[in-house]
Image 1 (cartoon, one colour):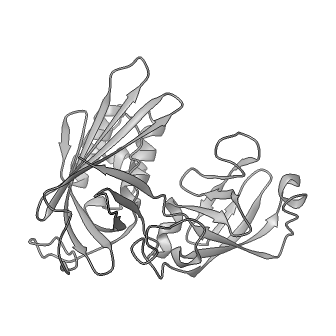
Image 2 (cartoon, one colour):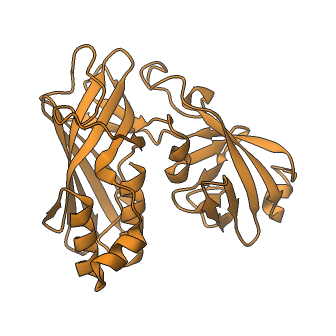
Length: 296
């Protein structure tokens, strides 16, 4: 869901409602099969159909609650952001989906995206909404948001059904471009995290200490900032899913990983406890950003 995340980030920067925070990844598809929207065929028993799942997360200014309602071949995601002392903000995303029960993989394609009561089913709709919301022309909106089409993306997620009926739902690293909107943790110390989606490298997401904003060039696979710069290489994409790992997802090389070679390092990373050096490759493991959704 690279295009949707990028678009929402852009909208947020220009005073849009809020960032789409669902865990996802994917690649573009040119398949014109309207019955499956280019999705792979389902395999095995679909235990998700007919069920709803929900996950709530507190953040510094309120709560975000995400609900998935699965039908036979469509699923509706409703995300409600409730800032403290303010009115809730809701966005709804409808998908076509298929799933592979053997591997624990879920494939989705966006059918519609509704924000502030405005339903969008094409990029033209998105450009028009953006233009109206930000006081610019449609042409300017298109230039700002770029030409990526989120309605053409095939999104890959991994899922694991627990004994109590709840599900774990996480990102799946199966595309080089997933790096652009993903988080990775240092293989030697998971507290050191690279958050490309947030345009920063951070030592601890819970504190402001040791955080450096970066600019990412995904084509060149380089990044740079005031005190930090380097390049990354995709070494291994995901080889196992949450099902293969029996629900265990953290700091596991099977999630896929990249290596980072720094050409400039801040003192925090070049000294204890990391003692990193320029010109040396360091392994960072993909974070599936896995959450447990309660069966309703």
